[in-house]
Length: 170
Image (cartoon, rainbow, N blue to C red; front, top):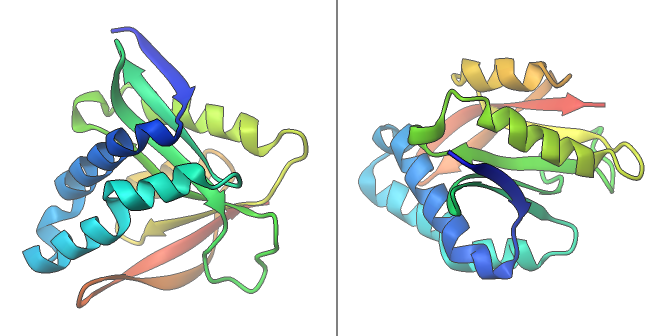
């Protein structure tokens, strides 16, 4: 295994889309009615929204590659989480997805370290993360990086409503 992390570009939109759809379906696919899941994946994770994100100069995506094949990614951009303390210039970690075949090997931490280097250079910025209230592993992961719960919001997938926690690293 030769793992590398690199910044993604606009040409990586299809790759990012593929990983997003596969990991989201593997993790949460049984949680939603099929038609709601399909529409959500199309609206948020298909190549077009990924391309728009990759074109945004305020956003950044890092790909984790194994021998040149993308197996995970981390996406970040301007904070969109609903919290009264959010300020312009704050950054939201939007997604940290690693394919099941590569989970548990510290690869999420490697992506997080690459992201934090960008986040804190040249000046440290406030980090926001939304995480499903039942995803205790993710909550522990983000806590290791100084993220603490500061609020809640509702995450909508079709007719489903999920309680999400808002985490912040000042």
